[in-house]
Image 1 (tube, rainbow, N blue to C red):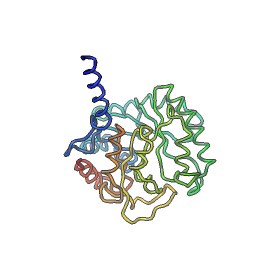
Image 2: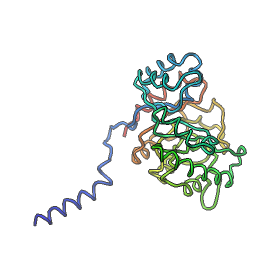
Image 3: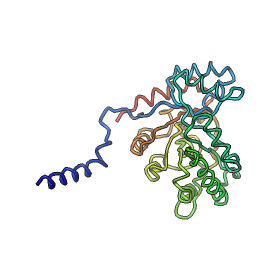
Image 4: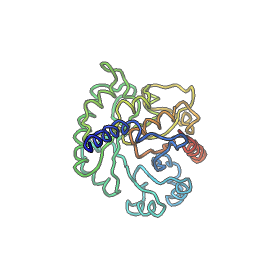
Length: 288
């Protein structure tokens, strides 16, 4: 009898766990991870003094940073400046050619920063004409470089930039990239604006590829602005989160289901100091 009761309890637990254990309650915040920022956001501020820029960043409430030490500042000094302000470095970046030619150097640089992730944000190609040959080159570089990084305790992630959505087969070249890279060595970072810009549906792609996604870049796109597959647009088309075309509630719901732990705001406008407080307030206002 006891054995029967135990089996019933276990069966009931199995039924509710997948769908209900991680269910959100009404009123829960949709932003459930530390507030992060990408280094490029403050490209206009570093030149005015790194400590001064970091003070602004701290005041805004950011606690995670993706990038490397600004020019002219040593890695150790920069890490200390961040740590003194309660900011960690979970992720850094690399150029494609660096990953392709010397992945061990990429790994060493990431380890010096204390980063656990390395992202690559661009695959070389002729503007607007990303091809299968370009994808094949990336697949080889990502699988081989990603293995070296994994052997060094670091996760490699490819940062989607929108030009990958060229039609191919029954899907796109992005699908081809994902299907032909090894999940052990290659994860994904979704830039939600660039994904949208290239014709992808951010929430649907998060759902489709699930755990392959490990982080997000959050930015919004001006309503009605033209879109294409170049992965390039002007800073005037970058608007505060919640003021553009992106459906952030849908995006955050899917990201939270997956369990994504890192989300970095990347503001590419020319008015980042005015835009960022609006973006942060919007993110914090979103509720289930």
